Amino acid sequence: MDFSAAPSSRIGFWKRHTAKHPGSVRPVPGKMGATGNMVFGAQYSHATSILEVERLRALQMDPASWANDHKAIADDDDSSYDNNPELSGYQTLPEQDTKDDAEQDIIPTGTPVKVTAGSQSLQGTSGTSEPSSSRQESAVTPGTESQVPSDPSSSPSEATAAESSTGSSGSPSGAIEGMKPNARNILQDPLLILKGLGYEAAMGDLHLVGTEHQTDEVYALQKSKQRARFHKFKEMLQMPVVDLEILRKLSWSGIPTAIRPIVWQLLVGYLPCNSDRRNMALERKRKEYHDGVQQTFARGIEGLDQTIWHQVFIDVPRTNPKMALFQNQTTQRCLEKILYCWAIRHPASSYVQGINDLVTPFFIVFLSAYIDEDQDPESYDISRLPTEILAAIEADSYWCLTKLLDGIQDNYTHAQPGIQRQIVKLRELICRIDAPLAAHLQSEHVEFIQFSFRWMNCLLMREVTLQHTIRMWDTYLTEHPHGFSEFHLYVCAAFLTKWSAELQRMEFQEIMLFLQDVPTDDWQEKDIELLLSEAFMWKSLFHASPKHLGGSK
Image (tube, rainbow, N blue to C red):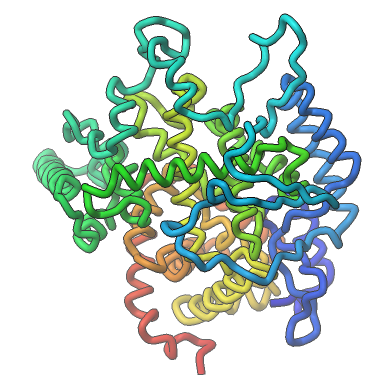
């Protein structure tokens, strides 16, 4: 894809209005298209200046200043990025990890590892040294030991011993506001989430979509169907071996809120279907992740790859900036560890802006497993939770993010070929299902890459609310194994054609402004259901018959 056909003023418009948006289109250095024009891709993490590295190192001695320094670093990064367009490309290694996650530790215990920090290489061995905090290192002066923040990489079992007799507020009862009474039991056996769970509590935001103006009889019928569906979920999850095909069929139309954590973990392939292996597998995977974090952060910030760490460091505060949960310092420390550990284990792609968005649905869904049904996960103060529960949420989010990205990793490798292919297919699909819209966009010199790149890079998470994204992911996870690639393409097509009438009345600038801020604020779940249904229809018509697409030969 290139912009050669568009007037220079319109290219300038696109660059002006997206220069500071994570996941926006940027030229890929050294990469030219077949016609000799520059290839465009998402922003990659770029080289950190010496001053920024020094500031990050200085922050280790002053934990209280980390939160205040987030905005300053992000602002400096934006300005330096605009002044150095060559830095938008990040050269990744050619090799990719191919070994299955279940067969390979993040960093095997006792294995020497080597991490790059600037121009130096640091050598370490798993399990031989105590880890330092990624953000909260400080010099301990006499008489101030009690004021030193706790180490986020410390062992959950160590913190558990201190918290087993007291709650987060220090009360001897151990009760924590908003946390389920059996939260620690659910930690060991996720199936306990079903204990005492009733229909009303379980269904949550899936109550009777589209029945707001129906008669009492229709409402009662719908409620009866929902209740029967909920009981099918319970029966399926309590079987010794879960039948994934049946679970996918049940989940396509949405998963009850209260049981979504365990269903997602089964659908994504993180939890074994065999209930006898489930608890042992959870314990092993969580330990693997924790050991990897300990080793990775054993030398503090100075022991990290500064290029990757800097981009993670500035992107985490930008993640869902209007949601209290993701502006909580405890949550941000968890996200930093998840994203950095994933990046160093996947050098072919490393960290790319937009991946930070993809971890948030997992994080908020897994958090909901441990808090009361009347608590809003989006505003819950996660720092109240015991350390071992925080560690479990973090580890589960990491492994499920890894499973998701394994299927779409070429979306984030150099030049992002997966996204480039999806954009070409989207254009062909729109030419077939809405020819007038495709013709109008072409006459206005609107390139599909200009607006749909972010749709593919962030899976439409910037266009709809997080709760609606979670509902969409219920269906994506059932479209195994290509829900986040192939099925998402048809969702994007349905999303674009929904605004066809409005777009055909607009000119170039209006189109671009509209598609960068699509009016979905008042959408309800029934709108998401309709979108998914239309996507399923288009997939049924065209996916098995690619020659029907306009661009096919």
